[in-house]
Image (tube, rainbow, N blue to C red; front, side, top):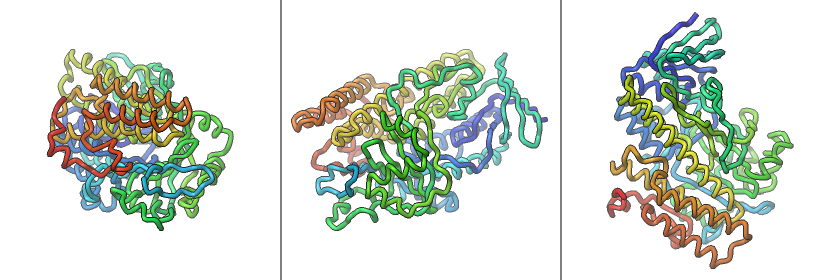
Length: 510
């Protein structure tokens, strides 16, 4: 029998749960980390963003985690951990396709959008092959002497003057863990929600989408797939494949995330009526059906081989009605999920880890912890609503690429402004995800997304209506626009502009 006692028990050993365990151990807490499965295990590929990397750097610096610091940039990751697979991410890439037609690059880039996230390969962001990064962090947990038990099936969670977790571990029999505080890092398993009977349905969320996904080998680079005869790729601000590639389709979008070992994470996200109709076919048939509608995308995947069966999800959206209490908390990826469109998951998880770690560091053993956790919950719920509204706004204009690129400017402006505030130490701990705590910004995004939705519902926007809307977006983001977004002279090609932003002082507090 395994019997352990701890200050904090963490359920779930993905990257967030393991990182939380390492941080709390540095704070002097006795931590136990529990895992239902074992590592290495399959997890869908994900990507970092500049905000992800900046927050991870801050956590490494604050809590003395030097072995994790190289993971914050592609160059240092590859130099320090050459055997730990990742991929290079230079930005966000979008291509708009028409069903039944080859994709043809346009001289004015009206059917594509590229937004650079960093200035060079060495300083690039990274694509995470989660099965490797999760395994790496679990090994760090073990090296730190933190008790870690995998293959644990929890059968009972008792909440009475602390927590008692009972279950069984494969090969070792019964498990009984007692802890003063419980953290749910189990993701969609929603361990705490089940234990406390918390509603995790998507009630109130606007976004509706589902997905098919797996990992492939043999996926051709997009730049080698399309016709280069006219040379319209030459003015891309970075190699377009070194990014999260979004193939924008009528029924949704396909993501392509490349890793350095030849594996590619790819999936199809469908929304609205397309999401409902997809359930009628097998995942493989639906994947093939959609590829066959878009000749250029089909050609990119023509020689691809799935290395494991396609996974089909139900509706992706979920949100816990409560995410924290006096002696418990959910990390963001356990509290909710909206959609992969904006690659927000890792950054938001790290922000949640940072907030929760500070609450426990400053208020452990004090009555003030209760109020601090209420603040954690309230901020997280506000951020969920903001992100949901923004993603839904993008999906509501999906068939109008010019409207979509305009709506995406809200995301990029908020993300880059938040990154710069953190990079220049002008931000505050009260800053919420994508600067969403700032009421004028929050209101501008909500109103802009609603205007875009109404334009899309009315049919194809006239040139005058489109000009008016893009002007509105440019005015809305102007106080936060430190990357030259909404500049018609850039023709949807946005290079990295951090140096200019810092030099002109546009990062100052507002």
